[in-house]
Image (cartoon, rainbow, N blue to C red; front, top):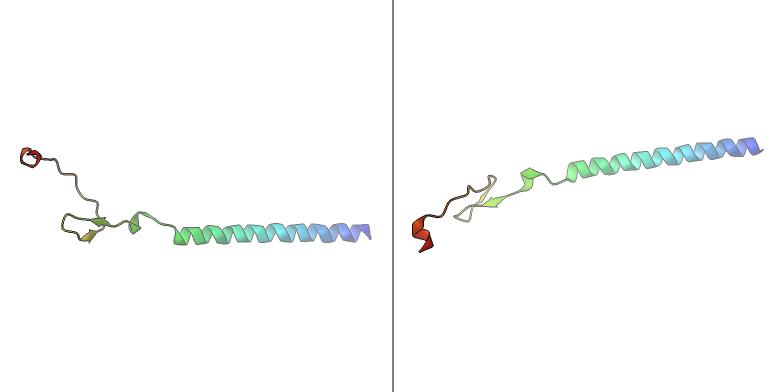
Amino acid sequence: MAKSQATFMKKQLEKNRQKKKEDKAQRKQERKENGTGADDIAYVDEFGNLTSTPPTQKQKSADEDQ
């Protein structure tokens, strides 16, 4: 009887390992699909419009300082 119990436990442990592996792969896939990327960033231009490109850096002129 001990042999059959050991075999059953081995099967159960392997089944648990496989389930954990599948769950981990599923969570990884969900993170990959729902992850935020650079495409989700929106910028506001000087007129208040949303754009997908970052604003360019403008240098201050002498007139703006006064």
